[in-house]
Image (tube, rainbow over all chains, first blue to last red; front, side):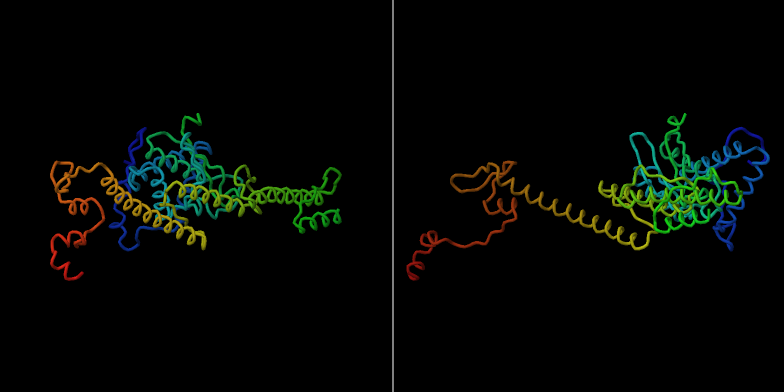
Length: 178
Length: 198
């Protein structure tokens, strides 16, 4: 899977392996700093190798793939939207990914404003003038796509890293952003 | 210059927002930097002021603050939480009792208790309504036209079977019967007994 050249995604949830039996002593979790170490070093190298735009594009695509797989394997997609949101909040909290809060839902236009507090990617980062949660953008869009069967676009409009203390996302149907 | 900055800071310390310093005539580089920094602080305090006043009145839409304003970031967080709570309250109003508030201290406990109470009250209310509707359906049955024999007073049900009036009424209402004998019938059935008592 990781050593052949291809132009399509192949990742499936089962590729994460049986962590419980593989790590009987160290367990399922790692500190947030390890996750960030991985993501930000990848990011740093990709920027030097591929440039900022390409790097962000790859991170969003990876987040989208992760979001789809997460939704298909960790969430019940049969629930109605309100119950689905409650479930998503609970699972994100249990997995220590972040505290999801809904600010606004416009069903008619399929447009949502969501926030993530204590975000895995960025909460506590030194302030810069940048929003940095591109992986979250893809992740949220991927979850919505797997749930609705429609293409979504998520854009971070406030970020802890830019001094906002909260990460806010504008989520809408893909066709509305084209 | 120092006097001007001292005055501006004094106004800020009073909770007001002063006019910015005119930097056009400042030639010294250090003074220019100082004035620019103070003007940035004034801009930030103006933004916080413009953000927090409507927020304190519960006006949650149409307010915004620029990124990088670190004085205002806790208020942005508060704003976000209030928007979320507003959405949750609307969800509850529409009957979605799955909503819970997390990590908001005493408020979480109060809000979550309220949701549980509302859910229990609604459940109890629905149960009572069901009982009342059931009782009402019995009353309606007895309110319809009841075919009764002119002679023996038996009642015919919907399927054509005849029942004694006691059993029919008992089966179609919450009423029960206790048997006794009226004075007129007592005279007819037990004339001797009635005569002795008189």
